[in-house]
Image (tube, rainbow over all chains, first blue to last red; front, side, top):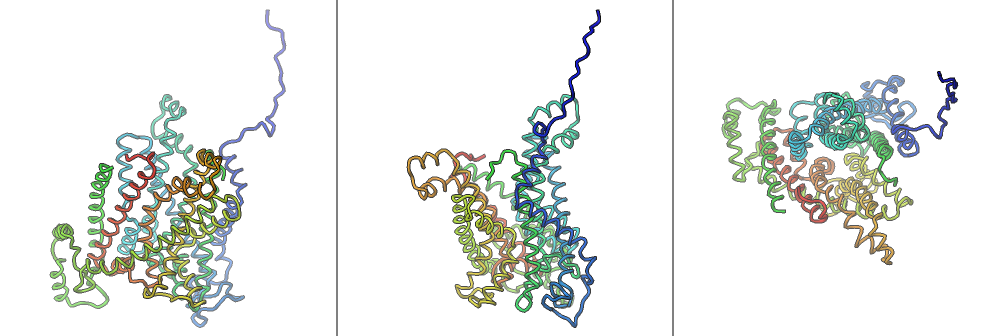
Length: 301
Length: 305
């Protein structure tokens, strides 16, 4: 006899707020928002970025427009941050220089990121002898006084801005490779990777679709902390005269000019120096905040 | 331990070899040589000069000659400074750089360690926050910003010390403080982190329960473990101080090796560039090795691999 009991109808209960689960990213975002310094850093960074990209369009002066009669003047209502010795408006040069400095920071970090992630992922995943050889190579390169090499590279092969990206990126990929490798090695042993393997997924797919997305946390943190290191290196090279060429200005060249003329025109040093330091501050605070937010095991201190 | 040291020393040899070879060929493949300056030199004199310094020989022969030269400890003549050998120039300038580096390191250690310990012991108080802010300042304000600013204030504005030079002992103050403060920031952060981790351990609780004073706990018990991250940082840090002196020496006009290195790179003075690079690389490798050995000595749990 067919069953005559009516099908059970249970009303569908939508998950209420306190029952809804959260993901790692939502947790991390929540924790990041609570860290005031990191939020301030992030907001400051966005503001500076927007100013540097969009600012020069709204200002009257071009960054290379010289006004030799004017010479260096202190901040006034016409030139908000004053002018340099060639009569160029400092505010526009600062914002334009920000484009270059931030651009170099992002591009070189991107170079370091790509090389480092691929290298580290392959080394960590393959393991065994290949890994040992690859890591030995990293250790050897790590031992080289790379600052010296970058200086030599820039002196000898000219001050091409692309070369600048490559040179700086070539210095920073090492630590990224190490971090990615250790992440991959700890993730490799987890069961979901074993499941992927038994499903017959190829190595490349496992690395790029399963391992790397789960290793994103430390990668993001370290990327955010590499950008200020790169900017510092670029400014250092500019200070030695090896960075971008005039009339292009990066913050490094502005600081260099300011340092040379600071006795009579201190604002030429103060403004670029302060903005540069503020940017680095924001990036470092943001990076620290991200690290605290994304690391599920770190003790809150 | 001796096996470890021997192994590291053996590993250092190929590294040095790679560095020497790479630098050697890089400097020579570059447009311009040591004698192509602004003044055009008549070709006969140029030829004589090149023959005198052995630059007219095929590249591989120059390379082998150089290697055998180094093996005897002779770094060759300087091309730019006639009649002075690289050994001489280095012997002249290195003590200055070492003094600068050594004093800066002392400043960095003193300020960094004290602030770090204080910040860890008085956690989350205003002392902690202000120390951490000073720490962050040191990391974010680069030496070439801090240096001129300090000169601007202390030397030009207040007139307390000379702006540049390396003559009286007061000339040492600004450069060493500038270089030292940057590294003090890193050391402070590392010390604070290390001490925080240690101070949460059970054996510290035991010491407190037994009635030891806070000072004794910090100095006699916590400091040993808390200093470990600093030690492992010191290896690369000393290398950084040595290379970071490029900038300081330029700002403060100090006759040290860093400035000489950058100038020689600009002047295409092959032998001086190579000599300095070899020196720095050797120092860095030796210091890394020393830092690793000290680390194992302090913390038996970290074994030699």
